[in-house]
Image 1 (cartoon, rainbow, N blue to C red):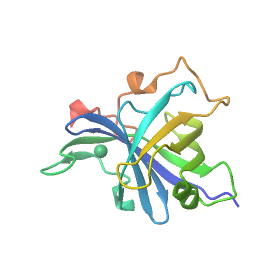
Image 2 (cartoon, protein in one colour; image 1 turned 180 degrees about the vertical axis):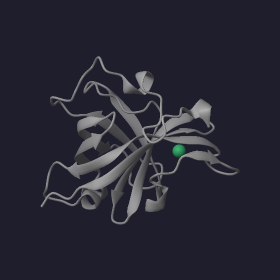
Image 3 (cartoon, rainbow, N blue to C red; image 1 turned 135 degrees about the horizontal axis):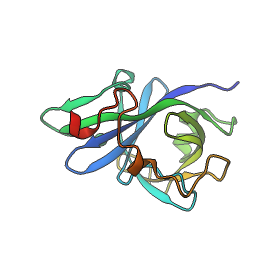
Length: 160
Ligand code: MN
């Protein structure tokens, strides 16, 4: 059984620019803030800080967040489906244990990735997001700099 679930990466200009990776799991969007965004180079380990779960209705969100936490613009930088690569555990169980390998089928990102928790569980837990070595790995690609636009509307953060 290969369950496909949705993912989104929001590019979010809050107090500091970051990329929010959100994976649909157990009826919510499990979320990490990735300051530098994902890399397609397997040698790059990107810090991913665990943040609050979001509701599934947030998956298409694009626009300006008003006052309060997260104030600023957000666009759908990438979206698509993902599936766990190791079928032993559900994604939510794998995340509880602090290690999930998954395959992304997005517009800008494709291939295998690993999320690995390096500290204690909980909000603000530090994880590493690393591209797996497969045919979609490419050290020369850098979609974070070459593809700034929304895959939903073509807008950039500056257009909001
Ligand atoms: Mn954010």
